[in-house]
Image (cartoon, rainbow, N blue to C red):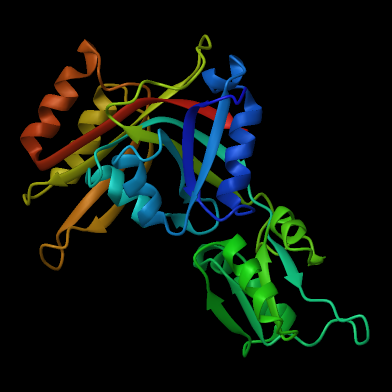
Length: 301
Protein backbone atom coordinates (compact mmCIF):
# COMPACT_ATOMS: atom_id res chain seq x y z
CA UNK A 1 0.00 0.00 0.00
CA UNK A 2 1.45 3.37 -1.06
CA UNK A 3 1.71 6.04 1.62
CA UNK A 4 0.09 9.27 0.50
CA UNK A 5 2.02 12.45 1.36
CA UNK A 6 0.38 14.43 4.12
CA UNK A 7 2.02 17.65 2.94
CA UNK A 8 3.99 18.85 -0.05
CA UNK A 9 6.74 21.47 0.09
CA UNK A 10 7.72 23.48 -2.97
CA UNK A 11 11.30 24.70 -3.46
CA UNK A 12 13.61 26.19 -6.08
CA UNK A 13 14.90 23.12 -7.88
CA UNK A 14 15.92 20.92 -9.44
CA UNK A 15 17.06 18.27 -6.97
CA UNK A 16 20.48 19.03 -5.52
CA UNK A 17 19.95 22.79 -5.16
CA UNK A 18 20.65 24.66 -1.94
CA UNK A 19 16.90 24.95 -1.43
CA UNK A 20 16.53 21.18 -1.84
CA UNK A 21 19.26 20.63 0.76
CA UNK A 22 17.48 23.10 3.06
CA UNK A 23 14.22 21.15 2.70
CA UNK A 24 15.98 17.93 3.67
CA UNK A 25 17.42 19.67 6.72
CA UNK A 26 13.95 20.90 7.67
CA UNK A 27 12.54 17.37 7.46
CA UNK A 28 15.44 15.95 9.49
CA UNK A 29 15.10 18.69 12.13
CA UNK A 30 11.93 17.15 13.56
CA UNK A 31 10.06 20.46 13.48
CA UNK A 32 7.39 19.30 11.04
CA UNK A 33 4.40 17.65 12.68
CA UNK A 34 4.07 15.37 9.63
CA UNK A 35 7.54 13.87 10.15
CA UNK A 36 6.97 13.69 13.90
CA UNK A 37 3.88 11.60 13.10
CA UNK A 38 5.92 9.59 10.55
CA UNK A 39 3.78 10.74 7.64
CA UNK A 40 5.20 11.27 4.17
CA UNK A 41 6.44 14.68 3.02
CA UNK A 42 6.67 15.26 -0.72
CA UNK A 43 9.25 17.74 -2.04
CA UNK A 44 8.24 19.46 -5.28
CA UNK A 45 10.84 21.38 -7.32
CA UNK A 46 10.08 24.43 -9.45
CA UNK A 47 12.24 25.98 -12.16
CA UNK A 48 12.15 29.57 -10.85
CA UNK A 49 11.46 31.41 -7.61
CA UNK A 50 8.47 33.11 -9.20
CA UNK A 51 6.95 29.72 -10.04
CA UNK A 52 7.65 28.49 -6.50
CA UNK A 53 5.91 31.44 -4.87
CA UNK A 54 2.96 31.29 -7.26
CA UNK A 55 2.52 27.54 -6.69
CA UNK A 56 2.29 28.07 -2.94
CA UNK A 57 -0.17 30.92 -3.35
CA UNK A 58 -2.34 28.81 -5.68
CA UNK A 59 -2.21 25.75 -3.36
CA UNK A 60 -0.44 23.62 -5.98
CA UNK A 61 1.76 22.66 -3.04
CA UNK A 62 0.86 22.86 0.64
CA UNK A 63 3.90 24.86 1.70
CA UNK A 64 7.08 26.41 0.35
CA UNK A 65 10.59 26.69 1.79
CA UNK A 66 12.29 29.71 0.26
CA UNK A 67 15.39 31.85 0.93
CA UNK A 68 14.78 35.37 2.20
CA UNK A 69 18.24 36.60 3.28
CA UNK A 70 21.90 35.61 2.96
CA UNK A 71 24.67 36.58 5.34
CA UNK A 72 26.96 37.65 2.47
CA UNK A 73 24.60 39.13 -0.12
CA UNK A 74 21.59 40.31 1.87
CA UNK A 75 17.93 39.98 0.99
CA UNK A 76 16.35 37.89 -1.74
CA UNK A 77 14.25 40.75 -3.07
CA UNK A 78 11.75 38.67 -5.03
CA UNK A 79 10.75 36.71 -1.92
CA UNK A 80 10.80 39.73 0.40
CA UNK A 81 8.56 41.80 -1.86
CA UNK A 82 6.22 38.92 -2.65
CA UNK A 83 5.46 38.43 1.04
CA UNK A 84 5.57 42.07 2.14
CA UNK A 85 3.42 43.35 -0.73
CA UNK A 86 1.08 40.34 -0.47
CA UNK A 87 1.42 39.41 -4.14
CA UNK A 88 0.44 35.77 -3.67
CA UNK A 89 -1.52 35.90 -0.41
CA UNK A 90 1.31 34.24 1.49
CA UNK A 91 1.88 33.88 5.20
CA UNK A 92 4.98 32.77 7.11
CA UNK A 93 5.01 29.96 9.67
CA UNK A 94 8.70 29.77 10.51
CA UNK A 95 12.21 30.92 9.73
CA UNK A 96 15.33 28.76 9.85
CA UNK A 97 19.04 29.35 9.36
CA UNK A 98 20.74 27.01 6.90
CA UNK A 99 24.54 26.79 6.42
CA UNK A 100 25.53 27.21 2.76
CA UNK A 101 28.50 25.40 1.22
CA UNK A 102 29.38 26.37 -2.35
CA UNK A 103 31.72 23.94 -4.10
CA UNK A 104 33.49 24.26 -7.45
CA UNK A 105 32.38 21.47 -9.77
CA UNK A 106 34.23 20.62 -12.99
CA UNK A 107 34.29 18.10 -15.77
CA UNK A 108 37.12 15.63 -15.54
CA UNK A 109 39.25 14.52 -18.46
CA UNK A 110 41.10 11.26 -17.74
CA UNK A 111 43.83 12.21 -20.22
CA UNK A 112 44.46 15.88 -19.39
CA UNK A 113 43.10 16.47 -15.90
CA UNK A 114 41.19 19.73 -15.55
CA UNK A 115 41.31 22.32 -18.34
CA UNK A 116 41.77 26.05 -17.54
CA UNK A 117 38.44 27.56 -16.51
CA UNK A 118 37.06 30.40 -18.63
CA UNK A 119 33.39 30.32 -17.56
CA UNK A 120 31.70 29.67 -14.21
CA UNK A 121 27.95 29.07 -14.15
CA UNK A 122 25.55 29.19 -11.20
CA UNK A 123 22.60 31.01 -9.65
CA UNK A 124 23.28 34.79 -9.45
CA UNK A 125 23.22 34.73 -5.63
CA UNK A 126 25.77 31.90 -5.51
CA UNK A 127 28.07 33.68 -7.96
CA UNK A 128 27.83 36.90 -5.94
CA UNK A 129 28.67 35.02 -2.73
CA UNK A 130 31.79 33.54 -4.39
CA UNK A 131 32.85 36.41 -6.65
CA UNK A 132 36.07 37.43 -4.89
CA UNK A 133 37.20 33.81 -4.62
CA UNK A 134 36.43 33.17 -8.28
CA UNK A 135 38.33 36.26 -9.44
CA UNK A 136 41.34 35.30 -7.33
CA UNK A 137 41.32 31.76 -8.73
CA UNK A 138 40.57 32.42 -12.40
CA UNK A 139 41.29 36.11 -13.02
CA UNK A 140 39.14 39.14 -13.73
CA UNK A 141 38.36 37.91 -17.25
CA UNK A 142 36.47 34.80 -16.14
CA UNK A 143 32.88 34.84 -17.43
CA UNK A 144 30.16 34.48 -14.79
CA UNK A 145 27.09 32.91 -16.35
CA UNK A 146 23.67 32.81 -14.68
CA UNK A 147 21.47 29.76 -14.23
CA UNK A 148 18.06 29.39 -12.57
CA UNK A 149 19.58 27.51 -9.61
CA UNK A 150 22.85 25.96 -8.48
CA UNK A 151 21.68 22.45 -9.37
CA UNK A 152 20.48 23.63 -12.78
CA UNK A 153 23.97 25.04 -13.32
CA UNK A 154 25.51 21.62 -12.63
CA UNK A 155 23.03 20.00 -15.02
CA UNK A 156 23.99 22.49 -17.74
CA UNK A 157 27.70 21.85 -17.11
CA UNK A 158 27.16 18.11 -17.52
CA UNK A 159 25.02 18.59 -20.65
CA UNK A 160 27.40 20.97 -22.43
CA UNK A 161 30.51 18.91 -21.74
CA UNK A 162 32.66 22.05 -21.92
CA UNK A 163 35.95 21.39 -20.06
CA UNK A 164 36.59 25.16 -19.81
CA UNK A 165 33.39 25.61 -17.79
CA UNK A 166 32.85 25.03 -14.07
CA UNK A 167 29.78 25.32 -11.86
CA UNK A 168 29.18 26.52 -8.32
CA UNK A 169 26.89 24.03 -6.61
CA UNK A 170 26.34 21.58 -3.79
CA UNK A 171 28.07 18.27 -3.21
CA UNK A 172 24.65 16.65 -3.63
CA UNK A 173 24.29 18.12 -7.13
CA UNK A 174 27.80 16.96 -8.06
CA UNK A 175 26.96 13.45 -6.90
CA UNK A 176 23.65 13.52 -8.76
CA UNK A 177 25.40 14.29 -12.05
CA UNK A 178 28.52 12.20 -11.30
CA UNK A 179 30.94 15.13 -11.38
CA UNK A 180 33.86 15.90 -9.05
CA UNK A 181 33.95 18.75 -6.54
CA UNK A 182 37.43 20.15 -7.12
CA UNK A 183 37.23 22.92 -4.49
CA UNK A 184 34.86 22.18 -1.59
CA UNK A 185 34.53 25.76 -0.30
CA UNK A 186 34.27 28.78 -2.61
CA UNK A 187 32.33 31.29 -0.49
CA UNK A 188 34.03 34.66 -0.01
CA UNK A 189 33.68 34.40 3.78
CA UNK A 190 33.27 31.65 6.32
CA UNK A 191 29.95 31.10 8.03
CA UNK A 192 27.90 31.60 4.86
CA UNK A 193 24.30 31.21 6.02
CA UNK A 194 20.89 31.72 4.42
CA UNK A 195 17.68 32.46 6.28
CA UNK A 196 14.80 30.40 4.87
CA UNK A 197 11.07 30.92 5.40
CA UNK A 198 8.43 28.22 5.63
CA UNK A 199 5.49 29.79 3.81
CA UNK A 200 1.95 28.94 2.78
CA UNK A 201 -1.23 30.67 1.78
CA UNK A 202 -3.69 31.66 4.47
CA UNK A 203 -5.86 28.56 3.92
CA UNK A 204 -3.31 26.08 5.29
CA UNK A 205 -2.86 25.04 8.95
CA UNK A 206 0.45 25.48 10.75
CA UNK A 207 2.65 22.44 9.92
CA UNK A 208 4.95 22.71 12.94
CA UNK A 209 5.12 20.35 15.87
CA UNK A 210 4.40 22.23 19.09
CA UNK A 211 7.44 22.93 21.25
CA UNK A 212 7.52 24.95 24.45
CA UNK A 213 9.20 28.35 24.81
CA UNK A 214 10.05 28.73 21.13
CA UNK A 215 10.81 32.36 20.17
CA UNK A 216 8.74 34.14 17.55
CA UNK A 217 9.27 37.05 15.19
CA UNK A 218 7.06 39.45 13.23
CA UNK A 219 7.69 41.22 9.92
CA UNK A 220 6.28 44.52 8.72
CA UNK A 221 6.06 46.11 5.30
CA UNK A 222 5.34 49.84 5.58
CA UNK A 223 4.56 52.46 2.96
CA UNK A 224 5.06 55.45 5.28
CA UNK A 225 3.37 58.75 4.52
CA UNK A 226 5.55 61.52 3.12
CA UNK A 227 5.99 63.85 6.08
CA UNK A 228 9.07 65.08 7.99
CA UNK A 229 10.40 62.69 10.62
CA UNK A 230 7.95 59.87 9.92
CA UNK A 231 10.62 57.14 9.93
CA UNK A 232 12.24 58.44 13.12
CA UNK A 233 8.82 58.67 14.78
CA UNK A 234 8.01 55.11 13.72
CA UNK A 235 11.23 53.73 15.15
CA UNK A 236 10.64 55.67 18.38
CA UNK A 237 7.14 54.20 18.77
CA UNK A 238 8.55 50.70 18.33
CA UNK A 239 11.26 51.43 20.91
CA UNK A 240 8.81 52.96 23.40
CA UNK A 241 6.70 49.80 23.30
CA UNK A 242 9.66 47.48 23.81
CA UNK A 243 9.86 46.17 20.24
CA UNK A 244 13.36 44.90 19.43
CA UNK A 245 14.03 45.75 15.79
CA UNK A 246 16.31 43.13 14.18
CA UNK A 247 16.24 44.27 10.54
CA UNK A 248 15.23 47.30 8.51
CA UNK A 249 15.54 47.68 4.76
CA UNK A 250 14.10 50.00 2.15
CA UNK A 251 13.05 49.26 -1.40
CA UNK A 252 11.71 51.57 -4.13
CA UNK A 253 7.91 51.81 -4.06
CA UNK A 254 7.89 51.92 -7.89
CA UNK A 255 5.60 54.95 -7.70
CA UNK A 256 8.23 57.67 -8.11
CA UNK A 257 11.92 58.35 -7.48
CA UNK A 258 12.65 58.85 -3.79
CA UNK A 259 9.55 57.03 -2.55
CA UNK A 260 10.26 53.87 -0.57
CA UNK A 261 8.68 50.89 1.14
CA UNK A 262 10.28 49.78 4.42
CA UNK A 263 10.71 46.17 5.53
CA UNK A 264 11.21 45.54 9.24
CA UNK A 265 11.67 42.45 11.42
CA UNK A 266 10.79 42.62 15.11
CA UNK A 267 11.36 40.06 17.85
CA UNK A 268 8.12 38.77 19.35
CA UNK A 269 4.49 39.31 18.41
CA UNK A 270 2.67 42.49 17.39
CA UNK A 271 -0.74 40.87 17.78
CA UNK A 272 -1.41 41.26 21.53
CA UNK A 273 -3.23 43.99 23.43
CA UNK A 274 0.04 45.60 24.52
CA UNK A 275 1.04 46.08 20.88
CA UNK A 276 -2.32 47.46 19.74
CA UNK A 277 -1.06 51.05 20.10
CA UNK A 278 1.90 50.25 17.86
CA UNK A 279 -0.34 48.92 15.12
CA UNK A 280 -2.73 51.85 15.52
CA UNK A 281 0.15 54.28 15.04
CA UNK A 282 1.45 52.38 12.01
CA UNK A 283 -1.99 52.47 10.39
CA UNK A 284 -2.14 56.23 10.92
CA UNK A 285 1.42 56.91 9.75
CA UNK A 286 1.32 54.71 6.64
CA UNK A 287 -0.47 54.48 3.34
CA UNK A 288 0.24 50.74 3.36
CA UNK A 289 0.79 48.30 6.25
CA UNK A 290 1.25 44.55 5.98
CA UNK A 291 1.98 42.47 9.08
CA UNK A 292 3.38 38.95 8.75
CA UNK A 293 3.50 36.79 11.84
CA UNK A 294 4.16 36.07 14.51
CA UNK A 295 6.10 33.10 13.14
CA UNK A 296 8.38 30.59 14.83
CA UNK A 297 12.15 31.12 14.96
CA UNK A 298 13.68 27.67 14.52
CA UNK A 299 17.34 28.73 14.64
CA UNK A 300 19.93 26.75 12.70
CA UNK A 301 18.77 23.43 11.29
